[in-house]
Image 1: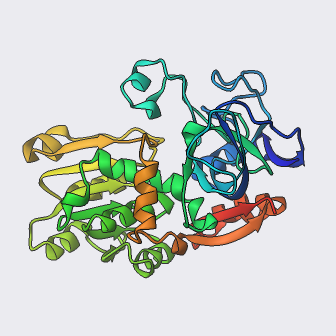
Image 2 (image 1 turned 120 degrees about the vertical axis):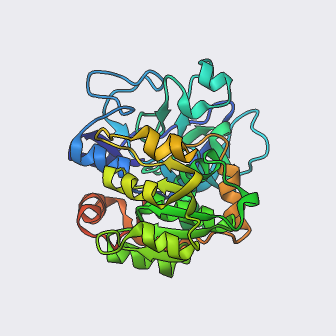
Length: 356
């Protein structure tokens, strides 16, 4: 079968590999669409970083070294089911929760398997990937998406990152009427805003890119957009809340100056949740930003039992994923029209790749 395999920095090859076979407790899937994630870009342009293995060091869960099949944000159609699999049938449309965990560490035992000590990702760490004609996955990670279109179903994985972050911040369906500020309108920022809107919050999105601010408005996930390079975010929030300021803020940018702006927009007793990965240290005035305002701050990573809620929000029409799909390409064009384009074109939100 054909698959796109990651060999290392700026080296992804579409080639023929052996087709996987079904085992007891597993499901064979024909991937339909695979989204390109920010982590894919980091791996392609920067080279292997954990949880990706290297040419000499295998990942502890998969036992694989480079090359590995790429792609972890994907949907597909069930082709075959293994012995003991129940609740899934051939022909079902599914999304995959692309994790590999040991199930024995303290985090796994506590149900926080997104924090597994040996965490790996299907499509990054081995065990196949969405950029292939066929993949075999443990039933645990396969989620039936019903009538959700397969292109939109490929976004269930990144949507689950946002659902997890929002829940981790203590926000849910009972939070209607609160005000949230989201810093950054990339894919995760937009999807986080979508979850907040689905739960009935007023959303204010801060983003320097005009194209992305427009996407936030056009998609309906933002009530107000702010250009922090030209406007005072705190003043806008103050005017929008009659002085009360925001109840919660989400950093989806990973830049220190964005955190500064978000803290300035928060009210007393509010919470700031970091969703983005920060590559540089951030200096925090704990007393001024947190203690004296009785605020809390947290951060979240990945997802754990969040896919069902993501699927529910889409199936019930509370979130429309279609506006965030900005391009569809064939796997043979993944470098030029995928990895390269995402670096240069800020209008792109999610590029989907098909093996067909």
